[in-house]
Amino acid sequence: MQLLALDAALSCASAALWRDGAVLAEASREGSRGQPAALPALADSVLREGGNVRPDAVAVSIGPGGFTGLRAAIALGRGLADGWGVPLLGVTTGEALAAALPAHRTEGRTPWSVTLAGRGGLVLERPDEAPALLEEAALPVPPGPVVLMGDAAPQAAARLLARGANALLSEARLPQARHVAAAAARRLSEGSPPRPAAPLYAEPLALRPPGPVG
Image 1: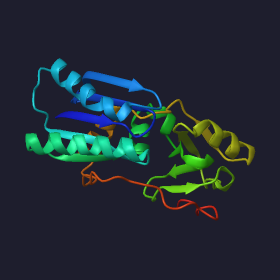
Image 2: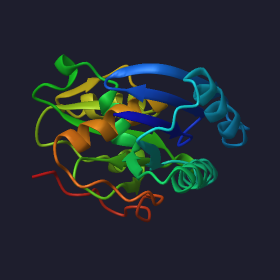
Image 3: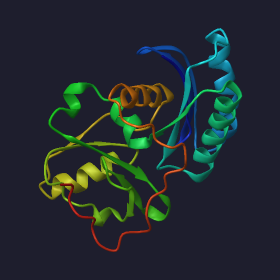
Image 4: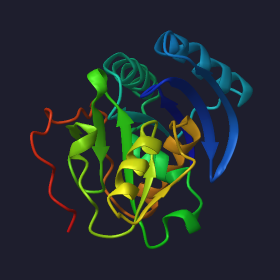
């Protein structure tokens, strides 16, 4: 399967052409400003490098993340998918970050994505849970071993380790399009239904810590 993947959820925009586990072409632009506007050029670049072959599907990051970046990536992905007549697949920020980790980093640990939000807040994304917007002090102590990912992972790890949690800080900070593609392909290979390509925003600020994952 060949996928065009797009990501602009956090402070990096990227596009990648991916086929059967291999990255055929990729391009990215980091920075706090201008990434969403750069995404069409990045997509055009990887498509040209890949020979302008129509992909079998388009995968796009749906968040949690910045409002403008998510909207820009989803709109571009939808336009390309509709034009080619191929499916548009949604991938969460946490799924993409988890796909970046080697297997030994996730073995026996639940992946937690912790990303920065406005006004000093954090967004916690856990498997099979709605993302929660909360203050750093409200981070819940996990019921078991976790691996932390995302641009707020270092401060989350420090907070949880100080409270005695079994938390491992990973190297995964920003999602990349290649990982969006890998996560989408993994979901399809497992027989899971595709995620809708709609922005995934965090719930309002938590006034109390969210409950543990069962």
